[in-house]
Length: 322
Image 1 (cartoon, helix red, strand yellow):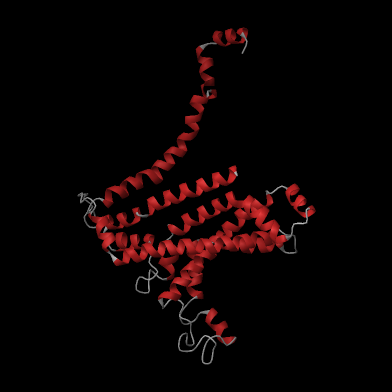
Image 2 (tube, one colour; image 1 turned 90 degrees about the horizontal axis):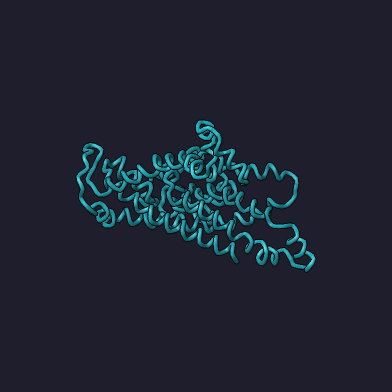
């Protein structure tokens, strides 16, 4: 800024200079960030503080006075066999579903990146489970996996895979598979719905990463005579590692904190075999009326999610620098 310009600016009346106070970065930045800060504090900060206070107290639905009891709620949760089952199921459903999603998402992304007739329709159908409200989607699966009127069982009976003389054995499956009546089949059903729900988002994320790979790299690989699998494992997957980390991070967060699938599909049954931390915290805190114990169970989600987020972001950063 020249000396004359500075002199002209100094000569401006104070009222006119005040009109341009938002041009200052030190003022404009905090003003623009203020709505986001208020939103985060109101929707995340205050509920988190209340959850910590509740977890250290004996507050219930009937008696909302906060009387601190220390870590008693956490000790009661750890001594509960249902809590240990819910903790194990939460990790199993999350880890196994994301492993399956990662493999299927890579395959679908490669298929959808090719040119073929009806590609837009296929993309729409792949994305449809993610755009559908999760409660409606799981309600549809509840009807589909019904113990008596399941259309899947009807089709299996028509092709001879259920019933007397079926390859699966009539003693084990009978005329109906009873997907939600046995612990192992109910767990498989919950796992399947989690994969169905998170697969579209992971596919779209990886598809965006595939389209971002420079065409020069693909042309160079074709000129060098690299085959399909060589290009996939030596070029595409290494370049997609940061994008994969993001897709897995979103999938872990959505699956680890979800209670809708279990609540609608099995309500944690049979015999708490499909119970997860989020659903058990709801049953214990809301339906059971013990807000303190429910908050303590829910807080077990927090350190795990923070650790997973930090780990995945670290992996993504390292992959970018390689």
